[in-house]
Amino acid sequence: MKYFSFHTHSHFCDGKAHMSEVCKKAAELGLSALGFSSHAPVPFSTKWAMKFEDAIEYRKAIAHYKDEYKNQLDIYAALEADYIPLGKSINYDIWRQMLELDYIIGSVHLVMNPEFPDDLWFLDGPSENYEIGINECFGGDVKKAVRQYYHQIQEMVRTQKPDVIAHMDKVIMNNKGRFFREEDKWYQELVEQTLQVIADSNTIIEVNTRGIYRGKYHTFFPNEKIIKRCVELDIPLTISVDAHHPDELKKEFDHAVNVIKDQGGNSILYFNQGQWEQLPIDGV
Image 1 (cartoon, rainbow, N blue to C red):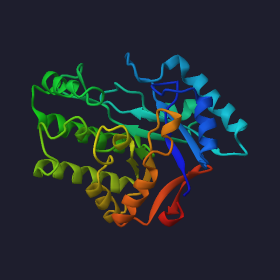
Image 2 (tube, rainbow, N blue to C red):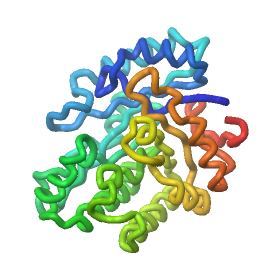
Image 3 (cartoon, one colour):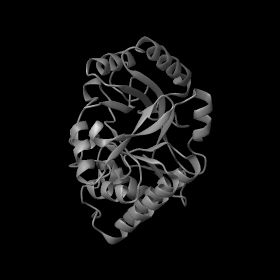
Image 4 (tube, rainbow, N blue to C red):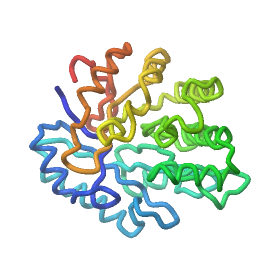
């Protein structure tokens, strides 16, 4: 098995280990490539995003470890950058130029109701915050909240052009069947609309394994049905363990490979020396 981790967190954001520990463990586990992707700074206080003042040091640290491990594994510089409309997040091109990034993973953790732009629905974190955010930001209108989540992803794809989309359907994680069902027609139409936008952009969708190994959800983000639809639409896929600790660097990776194969996928995307390449699934 050819293992890699292109979605990886460290002590620069909400990761649980120093970058040096992550590199050491990646080499011990035999990974072929490691991409650091700290949560990009946002213009307000959070417990999980990197601080603005640490961004340059973050880039220098990656360069240091890239050189130190050059004979053991390929190390790349990236960010997981949140997208929030109306300029409430930093334009991805600014990060690309300032930090000379190899790639950007685009994500939506904070959903804005355009009618009340000062309030943001944080759909990650403790599950009780999920309902609070729907009530406070969207007046309890679940459909409106979920629609805005997917519209924000679509807008991110069109305007920011990320290389990879993180955990595309993560809006379901803290729902746990409480407010809507994934089988609901309106929800399925939203997903399909979003996939069509992504298909037109040639953006990569990651199959994120973190929900399973952390016990947060019973399947991947996105789920098997969406993975199959990605294959049908020729949307490129990659695998992300979304590691926040060195011990997570290979968690559920083999499982994800098998699921992609089961859904008809015959390749995944692999970042190699400056570009994304198709890697035959049987060669992973």
